[in-house]
Length: 192
Length: 97
Image (tube, rainbow over the protein chains, first blue to last red):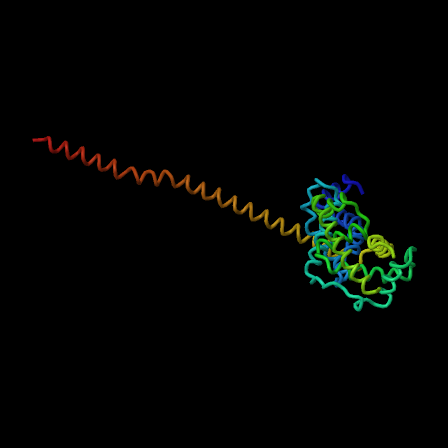
């Protein structure tokens, strides 16, 4: 859907055409679902958060000015809602080897000793390990790491998604990465 | 042993979620979303009504003020003119032998 089509749908919606609003809803839903799934706080259900974001977007739909592309506007609402949810979670202290499951410990060992990529059976454990590592970061840093390393967004894209400046993103990424490195080094020391 | 940064990069690469989430919205969300949009439109209309009401009130006050002005103006000038008239009469009567 182009921006012109979005504007047309909004105009039709203002005239009372609910089908146009539903078209917009179905257009933005996959985008919202993907963003929320990628930046989901640890203790939050993806479905609940997707619904929350969708309701928020629909409630503010008439406030969309059209100055930015529609999906950018939706993304910013989704990312900020995720960030607010993450802020409610308490930061966990640094993880120790004893906190890891057997599979997660195997992943750490594999990464340290073998140069090859992890196989499909280890990906779930890798994902859980990353979640545990990220949980020790500040909410904003955690979100940034997910956007950067798990979703594969670049600095410019993150800036448009979050509204943060490029400098702030770079500083936060550097700090968060150093923090993760420190944590991971401690884990490695325990395994050896 | 592999360097820490390399291990972290590989860990993040493995943790990337390849599977895309279900693209169809869950049952009922469409209705709820539409209801949220309708509700927002209604509350905006309410705010608009309040604006019209406030403007109407200001216009009513102005009309009331404008219509009362001549009356108020008259009451403030009348005592003076009456006094002057009385003074003139008094002077006139004093001069008469």
